[in-house]
Amino acid sequence: MTMAFTRLRLAAIAGAFALAATGAQAETVLHRGNGAEPETLDHHKSTGVTEANIIYDLQEGLLVFSPNGEPAPGAAESWDISDDGKVYTFHLRADAKWSNGDDVTAEDFVYSLRRAVDPATASDYAPILGPILNAEDIIAGKMPTDQLGAEAVDAKTLKVTLKASTPYFLGLMVHHISWPVHKATVEKFGADWTKPGNMVSDGPYMLAEWVPQSKIVLKKNPYFHDAANVKIDTVIYYPTEDIGEEFKRFRAGELDMTYSVPTDQVKWAEKNMPNEYRNSPYFGTYYYVINLTREPLASNVNLRKALALAIDRDLLVNKITQGGEQPAYEWVPPGVPGYEQQPVDFASMTQKERNELAKKLYAEAGYSADNPLKVQVLHNTSERHRKIAIAIASMWKKTLGVDMTLTNQEWKVYLDSRDKKDFQIARAAWIGDYMDASNFLDLFVSTAGERNDAGYNNPKFDELLNAASLNPDPAARQKQLEEAERIFLTDLPIIPIYHYRNLNMISTKVKGWVPNVMGFNLTRYLSLE
Image (cartoon, rainbow, N blue to C red):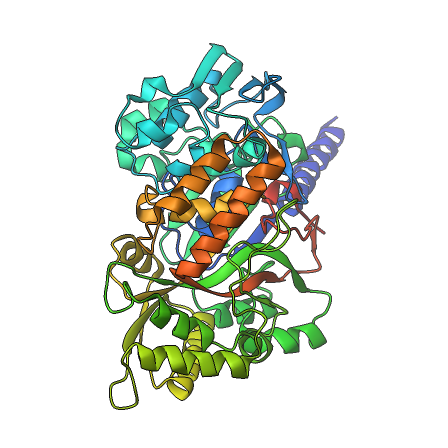
């Protein structure tokens, strides 16, 4: 009996070790490069892609991005749309829960939508919720938040009423500005609700650790309704503004995915790491925004045009960025169904013709070799942005004689400078949140607040966008948006430079990564071989 008992004990111990080893092997950790340090993880206040990547792992809205970047059911398993397109009734999943085990309810969404448009929240993104009934007046401080067109019919049914039929509304619901926050947590911790140990999330992951400038660690949320299909146990995001260093870390096996690829490594990666290098279309535009509250550029559209003309975009994308980017002579990127891009009037010229016209306009504005225009260009810390700025400085100097000064700032400081209009010209980019031209054009309505970096104000432009937001005829609406873009690019409050490509390094161990124009690849869909 003793020997048999001993054998049983040894077998049990061996089994325990085997189980532990299996468990250790089953633990999957994904290491993701993620650009700059996140500004905030409060999804009603964040503005950047680096924050969104993390937020889309932590939280879940009524709808989410599918693997191919299209809207898909999230916390809402289904929805009904009224015949006039003004009322959306969302049916929440019975098993939708927060990471502390609380049910996700329709009241959570009502509270959160009200918080998003509340002027006290000061959300840069609040204006995109303008299609919801009374949202614009609430954002402007003209109406209390309880007048928002959002109602909890019952615990699992949310009714959202719009001011007019909005064909892109479901796409808008994929954006995190419309996603819920846990009311009790926000009210208990205030601004600290996003800290590890405080945050309660309703997505596939929970915030476990945040070491500034080092890493953000997310752990799988056991209460998530689709937890059984989430294959990655832990995802670690690494903020790395130096994408050259990020590329080195990927090659050393420290990262499974990168945020981007350094311009000077694109051709090398394409040739030497074809199975890891990914290059796909991206719904975004890289541009320079001009501060229209500062002279001399503010009141002289021809001077702004001279600067726009003198940028050789073909040279930039072929010699500097080298990722197959498309030179931009429009604000709205290609790909919006039913929308015809509206290029600037010099798009069909040769670069030689552009340069000659630029010189003429520059001289007419009173500038010359003896009296050069002096401009300051602001960009966030990045080797890519620095190289582009240096190239543009050279073009402006050679063609016009402009003296450019470059200023780089860390991401959060740079965003603050743009919000406060503490710049003359700033590097900027906009990546579309949903596939509609209004997502680009609405940034520059006069009531857009800090989102309108240029301080642009044209009543006709505003009028067209307002009319388009109320127009039930899709074709007529598109014509109004096209006319608005023509006016916008005639005024040139920005200088479009190129339309993006999404450049990444993805380890061959990573499965489930799908290129898509929205550029988001949620960890919930990925696995490790």
